[in-house]
Image 1 (tube, rainbow, N blue to C red):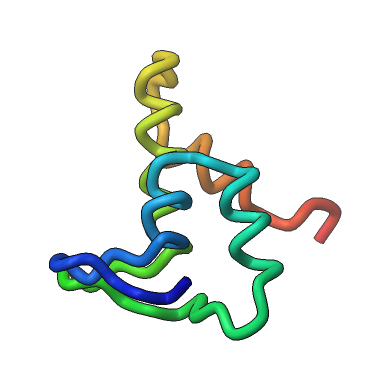
Image 2 (spheres, one colour; image 1 turned 60 degrees about the vertical axis):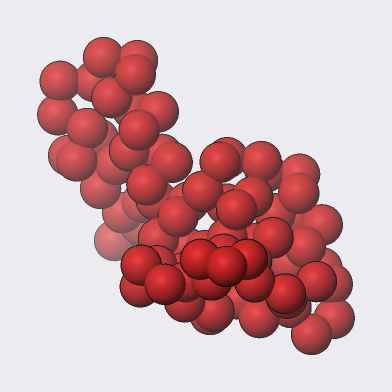
Length: 78
């Protein structure tokens, strides 16, 4: 479950980076999953998921994908 590829990518990291939400949910429910594992590029699953969201925003033509991304993540009502 936590075995990394030759590049240090775990199944959780690959699923998060590629936007496979159901796989991420399944892997996160597994006992002993290493959520903070860092691959050879210095990225963990959360950073991979953020990269996927940014790429998705660029593909749909968001003029300022960084601002849109921050707005999506910023807590509401604070």
